[in-house]
Image (cartoon, rainbow, N blue to C red):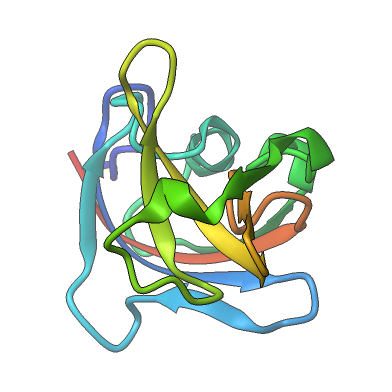
Length: 143
């Protein structure tokens, strides 16, 4: 009996850890319930899925993904300044995630990065933009 390898459209169950290049763990489920997903469903980074191809149940792997292949480079153009009056009714503080609508009326989250007088700076970059990532995985099931 051969063990199935991960291919496009595989259902995969795994434990993972997401780390920054310096080793800081950002997210991990090694201590909890395993994650289940379908390759190619658009929920995971394409570069992450590519690294899983060919792995089988029982395999363990660790791989680096450059910022450009993860959440992209940090872009100063994604930092916008607004009048404080635009946030009426919100208790503004640094780190607060606020939701805006883009031109197509899709939700666009941003993080308040600075408050100076009547000006509020909101960063629309992904929090991991510009960061190289390291993934550690343990494949539990492949269907």
